[in-house]
Every structure is written in structure tokens, then in C-alpha cells.
Length: 279
Image: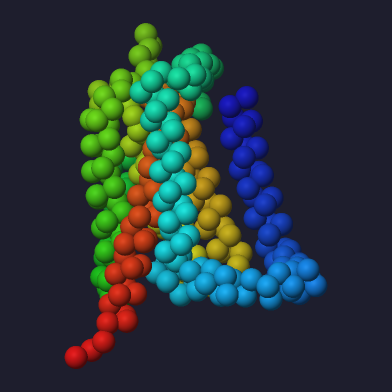
């Protein structure tokens, strides 16, 4: 069942990518038709000042193609999700009961082949892999003189993972305990470091790819591939019995919030310096 779920997810994303690539013209045409519909035109005329304001806020000219407004929406939304999960964990709400049930079910249905596969997937968010990719990206940004991208990378990954360690220490949540554990880890559980690292790293790479690649199909592929990696890595931590569901959900939410905050900060800095008059 677990393997079927993973394969179904991969197949669904592959189908979605092929459909979006094949129907790019249809998607653009339908959007153009909707924009010229009489009712839409009337609304655009009526709310022209407000729409102009939104268009300015959502302009793709900002850093990494995401404006302050979109970054703020992601930041507040992800922060709210993290806050709700944290509240449930601290107060012992029903989410913690679901945590135990899912952890027990996965542990009872573990198989050697799937365990080895998910061990490998889990390594994609391990410290050596994350550090290696970060160093490669940093060298690339230095060579290409992408100083704002380099600043965003340094804020996103090193400081983001430092924040994860601080959150773990603040919540002091113990990991699942098993008589026959698949992995043995001694640190705290909440939020998941692997889930947060995957969200920060592969989310950053996906947005960077969207900005650098012009072809529609590769932009869509970058986003879907990053999302799939984040989900699979997070699930691997559940399956290996070292995290609860709330741990990985909180890790993804915290990672998304911190990533959005870095976009906002670096984007604001770039706009400020670009608009600063030269004396």
C-alpha cells in the first residue's frame, strides 16, 4: 500500500506535467478569454485603482520573481499552520493521537526493500548532501556575481537550519520509541530537520530555476520535482520511525515561512538599493 501510494503520486505528477506542457496554449488562451469576458471587463473597469495596486505588488520584476505581497502571503499562511500544529503538540490535542496511529501503522508495515529505498531518499536532505549543494550553489553565484541570490542562499539554509535546532530545543519533544527501531537518533523530534531542510533547499532551487529557465515545461517540471522531493523526504522520516506526522508538517511549514521571509528581506533590500539615488 505504501509503495502503491508513492508510485501513484509520482504517476499523478508526471501526468500533470505532461498535461500542462501539452496544453500550455489552451491554458493561456482560456486565461485570455476569461480576461476579456464582459463581466470581467466591467469588474476591471470598476476596480481599476485596486487592480493597478495589486498588479504592482505582484509584478514578476522582484527578486526571484516573487513580490513582497506573495512572499507575505506565504509567510503568514505557513506561520499560521506552524502555530496551529505547535499548539496541538503542546496541548496534546487529537493531532498527537493521529501521530501515534500513523507511526504505529507504518512501523508495522515496514519491509526491507522499501526501507532501503526510503533510507536513500532520506539522505537527500542529510547534512552532507545539503551542505554540498549549498556550497555548489554559492560558488556558482559568486562566479556569476549574483550577490543577492548568494545573500538569499546564506540566509535561507544556514540560518534556517540553526533556527530548526533552536525550535527543537524549545519544544523538547521526544522521538517515537520502538522495541525494534529502524534508525536510532538521539536529538529532539519537533520540528523535523529533514523536512525543513528539504523545503528550504529544494524550494529555493525550484524558485531559482523558475527565474532562470524560460521554457514553460521546465518551469513546471522544476516546481513539481521540488514538491515531490519535499513530500518524499518528509514521508521517509515518518516511515523510518524517527518523526511523527506533526513533526514533518511543522518542518515543512517552518521551512516555507522562513524561505518566504528571506525572499521578502532580500527583495526589499534589492529594491531599496536599486532605487537609491547615486550622489
